[in-house]
Length: 197
Image (cartoon, rainbow, N blue to C red):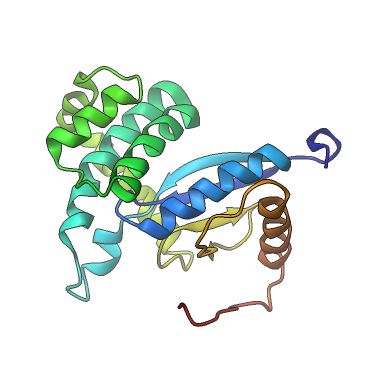
């Protein structure tokens, strides 16, 4: 399918670097962008914050604090492309290489993504980087978002997922996108699920 014939869909993609489902969905959405016209905006949703009331915060959720703040600063300076570069490396390191995103590893990831190592220090020294990601989290949580990955497609209500393993590629990724995009517009649609094996 030619991507130039249809108006691009705007996708707000809510992520947390701790979540493997968020990572796989982001890999899929990048595949979608190769075969469908999509304009991706990277946003932040904190699993630490959403799980705090139930006492279900995990150590990996805490590590996301650093990655969020680095990505906030990268977005201020380089837009969505800056977040994309960092999230690619954070995600691959955490979910493909299975390494914890401790402070030292986070710094290595930042440099690997092409940013100066000082980016993390600058982000952590600026309290507004924390405020920004938490405000973004609270705003979308107030609209019913409960986890990641969550998508807002062309202004839709947030939809969770899709949860996918393995990640489809090429036209198959595009076909899944067509279905998800269509379902996101149906106000009466809430859930479609099957047992994971």
